[in-house]
Amino acid sequence: MLVELGVVEQRYQAVLDLLGGASVTGVARRYGVARQTVHVWLRRYADQGLAGLVDRSSKPESCPHQTSAQIEAGIVEMRRAHPGWGPRTIGYHLEREGVEPAPSRSSIYRALVRHKLIDPQQRRKRRSDYKRWERARSMELWQMDVMGGVFLVDGTELKVVTGIDDHSRFCVSAKVVRRATARPVCDALAAGMRAHGIPDQILTDNGKVFTGRFGPGKGEVLFDRICRENGVRHLLTAPRSPTTTGKVERFHKTIKKELLADRRFESLGVAQKIIDEWVTYYNSERPHQGIGMVPPIRRFELADPEPFEVVVNQDPPPAPDPVEVVADEPRRVTRKVGQTGRISLANFRYHVGRWLAGETVDVVVTTDGLVEISHRGVLVATHARQHPPEAEPQVWRRQPRARPIRPPTMGQPVVRKVDSSGGISFAGVSYRVGNPYRRQQVQVRVVGDTVEISKDGKLLRVHAVKHDPIKAHGAFANPGGKPDRINAAS
Image 1 (cartoon, rainbow, N blue to C red):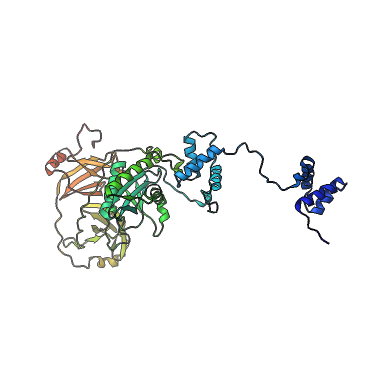
Image 2: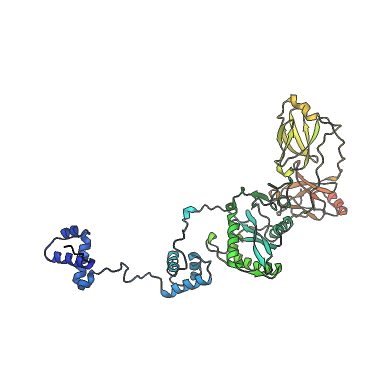
């Protein structure tokens, strides 16, 4: 007859076998345990008797590094007061409050799990799962986007034009608008540049307010034009790739979670005021985990600010001249520059530059095999002839039309030195040239109702006349600038 013995009874029988003279190895083999376990049973029976053979927890009787109950209560209170705070943020605030000893991140995590404030089944990403990149300094790249989710009490949804400095995570724009059309978005861009400076690059998605890349039109949109006139390189993400602008998307998650969740505003002005106050807190006080738990302003203030002037010309660009052939110069033709910055000549492509897209240029094929491309009398590109000589008749076969007379140049070229903000002063008015040409000399001409700025025969910028024509005579009388000025051209 078989009798099932309990665990304690089996251990007790093993101890009796040992006391009866059996070997430890034989007893361990008979009961299927290690020799060390048999020694533990024998030691516990000698100390506590039969009660020592009962199952017990492996938890140590004391732990000198265990988080105290007071600190654990503070952790739970912080989490309940701020559900968006994780273990790292809670640890940062505990250190600021002078908690000694400060618990580690894993200790805080385990405390939150014990109180069921964090789901332990939720997967925690490993560091190797993240692929991060950022610019090396502030004002090198801005990420801009449009965010929804701001509601009024009547149910109207507003939009927010947001911008984040890539290196410092500093918020450079958070403008509330009723509709995210081209003009409000560009007003937010201009306001951000006036407040914080002109960045080197701006990264956006392919929205129609940012680019005409996928729109019905072929010309540049207002956002692109403002970037070009201020010397900013506009970068676009690949289609359907929101992770490329991940920093500004993460900013959207933060502001929605900490400020906009289940909140309604009375008016647009009230919403803008509350968001501005939160942005001030975000930039100057709130620690950011992505930059070492310091406020974004600590990184952003390291940028070297320089004087600047934001150029926002919202007037539509003048319509380009029609494509035509000059009658009295049989070897000179005009071409319209495509969106890729190229022109076609006898079915061959010649590069001009994207900055002249949509403009009309003059093309001359010289007798020594060169193709010279000029824009408003300024040589912009020179190429070796790619098309064969026998294809030359294709260039001139079109019947020429009368070409409109170009407005004459007023006065002589005036030399000016570009200041540290990327602009020049002409007739008491500042004209933008671009940051790449700072502290270099350029030539200024007044052509009709435009001001053309060139360097070494290459056209850089074309602006509508903003100065008083009467003051222009003084500029032409002193083409090198005032002698007593430091940045006067010599």
